[in-house]
Structures are given as structure tokens and as C-alpha cells.
Amino acid sequence: NQIFNKQYHFFINDRSTSLMGCSGFAIQSDDTIKEMVEKEVEHLPEDDYLKRLKTGDVDLSVRRQALDWVWKASAYYHFGPLSFCLAINYLDRFLEVYDLPRGKTWTVQLLAVACLSIAAKMEETKVPLLVDLQVGEPKFVFEAKTIYRMEVLVLATLKWKMHTITPCSFIDYFLSTICNDQYPSSSSMSRS
Amino acid sequence: MAIAGAGQLNLHESPCWGSRSVDCFEKLEQISEGTYGQVYMAREIKTGEIVALKKIRMDNERGFPITAIREIKILKKLHHENVIKLKESVTSQGAKDEQGRPGKCCPIPINNLLLGATKYSPAVDMWSVGCIFAELLHGKLIFPGKDEPEQLNKIFELCGAPDEVNWPGVSKIPWYNNFKPTRPMKRRLREALGNQEKAPATATTRRKGQTTEITAFTASCRLPPIQSGQAHAQMRPGPNPPLHGSQPPVAAGPGHHHGKPRGPAGGPGRYPANGTNGGFNHQNHGGGYSSGPYPPQGRGAPYGSSGMPGAGPRGSGGSGYGVGAPNYSQDGPTEVLVLDVALT
Image (spheres, rainbow over the protein chains, first blue to last red):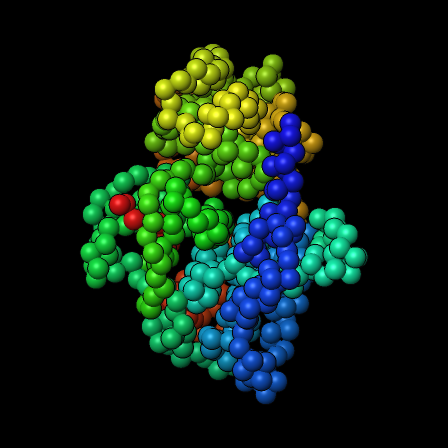
């Protein structure tokens, strides 16, 4: 019984921190956090991307639409916050390096679907079929084959680095710091 | 609306197409094949290094397989001499590279998604863990079926066939009659695995005592259900699952606008009721990857209205629309390969 309890505890920890690239909260020391901050940079779009968004080089409204849809679909399927963060991370990293054709909003919608799909596959236990994922009456609906190709394009463009540090990765650290080192429950992230 | 010029998303022109092409490798021979795809022994042309090449199959309805995503995710995290090292992911049509180092070979089958199971759940993981324990004890594959029906039969032979006694409600499951064995099969797990004195189990396993492991196996080694009212079966624990007893029957998913029942991955005739083979009924050995016609989606906003040749979302790879257009083959799934392990 001891063994199983221990194991179970480990799994809970592991699940909540599964994308941090480090094991368990208990050892989320300042050093670990420092390492995570450093690593996070590798998984972020360059500063240049923000500039391009501001100047309209990357179409901000198109990005907003994509984000909007990802949010809706995540909520519809009760995806965890991590999936959402991952999807947006993929979306931005892709937009940063890949010039989608201008004026074709469907390409961004396709990208959004592919990013959410990959994120859900990384994190969720229940992942809907690709056609079912496209909830919320989006303007464009894609068939699975098309989404699959986009998934592969995203995976390859992001060099298969899908194991991203997200804001979620830090929440428990800050919560435990705020709460005087009292270790918050593992559900704190979902509540936040 | 401006029409995207041909090759506007041309993958060759993108400096960021992050994967090398599988053409960098020369396939030598096929090592194995599973529900996930095939594994080949291959040689990297440039270096002559021998590697294992795992070809991942596209799932017709789910795109890039979740099992592959999870496998990549986990392998990237695992660093141990006894765990295979993921060296690189390559695509069938690509450029540029990302290289890792090879590791030692010790493949452990992780996935045991049968019956076209597509929903991943803790129960599936528990099943897999049980199978791995059993294989460690047994020293070899415990369900070495060459396809899903045969594998299912092997499971029946070892774990016993499901009936109303050991699995109340099983006979009400629509596909039960197609799957049920034609002869009674008793559970003989303990006989088969209980006295594995010579099994090359790991030292740790032995030291901690086999009983725990076997119990874990026994507990988790329940039959995957033939899903009620659903296309895809999902493995979950049987009548007395140790950890997931409260898990509800497989949800049919949020039944939103698509609203029509989905057939099995390979079409309704995938597991027909006639014919016997290996103790139960099946005909199709396809494993659920047949590519039937895609169901219409009924919301064709952009189709045919964009004026772009093949550029609409439903287009199957016309030149103007880049994803997969110029570089991918025009039909059939794009083959994606994950380079797994050096066979050294």
C-alpha cells in the first residue's frame, strides 16, 4: 500500500508539472525556477515578434480571432489551462517564423485548430476527433487530412519542441511562496 | 481577396521547416509492425550510423497520432541507459535538421490500443503498465498478435473471455457478439505468469517481490471494453478495477452539431459478424487505417467560394494553399517518421 500511495502521489505531481521538464513540486527550488526562466526563453517568440504585431506586420486582429477560437474550443471541451497556454505558445511561435499568406484568414484558423489539437494531445486525456474539435461555428471548417498536414507543419516548424514552459509552470511556485511555503494543493493551478 | 501565389507557403522556401527528410536514411529491413506503424532498421546515409526508424501512421480522423505525441514527449524526458533515446524526428518530405545522440536499444512496447481505441485514458495507461510488468516477468511479448483481432484473441486466451459473470453488462455492448470468442476461455493469468522463476525480470522487480507486480498486472489486465454506442473502443478496467472504479462508461463526447454517430475507424464492416479466425469473429485485418471517404461536414462556407485553386480549407492540396501543397504528396497521408534508437 505504501508503494502505491507513493506512486500515486508522484503521478499527481508529475501530471501537474509535466511540461516543466523537471520533476515534482517538492524540489521546485529557486534554482529550479531560475532554470525554468532560462529555459522558457527558448520557447518564446523573439521580442521582434511583439514589434511586428504592433506594427501590423503580423495581423493582430487575425491573431486575436485565432486566440478567441482556441479559448472557446478549450472551454467547450473543458481542456486544462495548460493546453490553452500551449496552443497559444505554438501559435505565436509559428506565426513568428512562418509567413502565412496575407488576407487568407482561413490559414490562421487552420493554424489555430492544429495548435489546439497538438496541445490537447500533449496534455488531455480525452481528445476529440479533429472535425469535432472545430466547435463554435467557425467560419472555416477543415477536414482531418488538412489539419493533419498543418499539425505536421507546426511540429516540424517548431522543431518538435512542444514541451514548453508556460505561465502554468510557475503558478505553484509562486503560490507556495505567497502561502509561506505551505504547499498548495495540486488543484491550485486548475482553480487559478 | 488576394490569391496566394503558388508556393506561397512553399515548405522548401521556408527556412524554418525544422525536420530533416527521411531520405537522409536508407531503410534496410523492417523490424516490426504494430498498430502505430512500422519500425525499420535504417542507415543514415551521411554517417553510416545504424538506427531504428519508426514510421508513424496518420489517424484518419485524429490526425497526428496522440500516441506518437506522447511517446515523443516522454522519450524526450527520459534519460536512462535502458530506455531508448529519441534521436530525431524526420518527415517524409522536409529539409533542415535537428540531431541528437543515439542510445542503447531496449524497446518496450508502451501502446496497447486495441479495437481502434482512440481515447486515451488512465485506464489505457494502467493496462499498458500491466502488460509491461507481465512482459518483464514473462521475458517476451504476452500478446504477440499480428493484428488487432488476433491480439484481442490472445488477450482472451490469457485473461479469459468477457461474459456477464465477470463483466456485467458486457453482452449489451453492441459489438460484443462480433467479438466474443467462439469457445469458452478461462482466465489463466496466474498459471501463465505466476511462476516465472526463469523470467528475466529486472533485479528491482525481483527484489521487491513478484507478487506486487503480478497483482498489479492482474488487476489492470482486464479486457478493454467494446465500446457501447461508440465507434472507438476504449480500454478501461473491468468490473473491479483497482484504481478507476468510479470512471464512468465511455462518454460519447460532447454531442454538438455534428450529431451523427460515427462508424468504426475502418467503416462499419470492419468487424463483421461472420467468419471465424483465431477463436472469434473477424474478417478485416486492416487495423483501422483504411481511408474511407470523408464524411461531408455540412458547413461549407469557404468551399468553392474562395476562388483560389485548391486553396480552400477543403482543398486537398492545391498549389495555392500551402499546407502540404507543394512538398507533400497529393494524396494519402504524409508519412512522418520518428527516429527512435540506435541498434547498437
